[in-house]
Length: 254
Picture 1 (tube, rainbow, N blue to C red):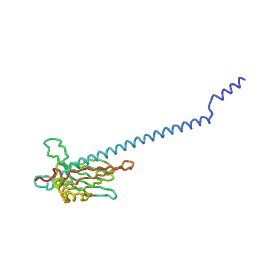
Picture 2: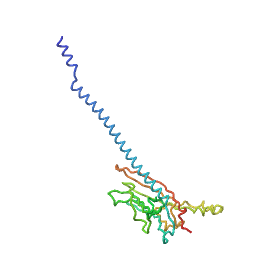
Picture 3: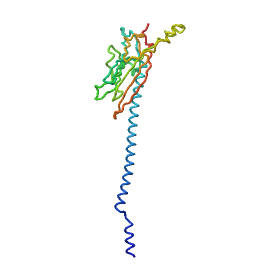
Picture 4: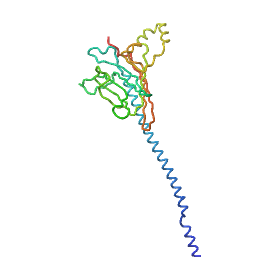
């Protein structure tokens, strides 16, 4: 009896090889499930961080372009002696299926950094895609605080965004001069003509110096579309609409 009891106790106190294998298999399944969940969470966190980063860049760029355009400064005949030349030139360019537009203009958006420096609040501003600095497409902003005869070069460059897919500008021509519209308020026939007038046209390019419809001036609206690509080749499109003031106090002095 004693030997039999000892034998029974000996066989029931340990695990068989099959039981051990089953336990290890279950543990491996649980660990792989936990690890998969952890990896997925890490990827989601990293992707959210990347998305937030590129959205932040896109919003910042759109705000910067809008601010500059809203301060666009152009006055016909400003190339007189003693006055800096001013311009607003939008070039419609492309590379295959992608827009590569360029916009050069003068704007009253410069903050004087230090007294006594030879600069004004009117500066040359350019936006375009550059591929000569690195091995990828960059959106750059050029600013020259000393407007001169060469309004499309000089100054300093600042990189605003990397891995740019396209940059596109569209320009809507201005409507009737508000002053002229006010003078015609009481004229019923003029009011009917104004209502019958078609909506102002949109253009892919603009040159304020040669645009004569209705007059040499800035466009009234500029539509900006920017496409960026992240490191996973996912594209993000950003767009904004900037309102300019073609009839504001930028007109030629009388």
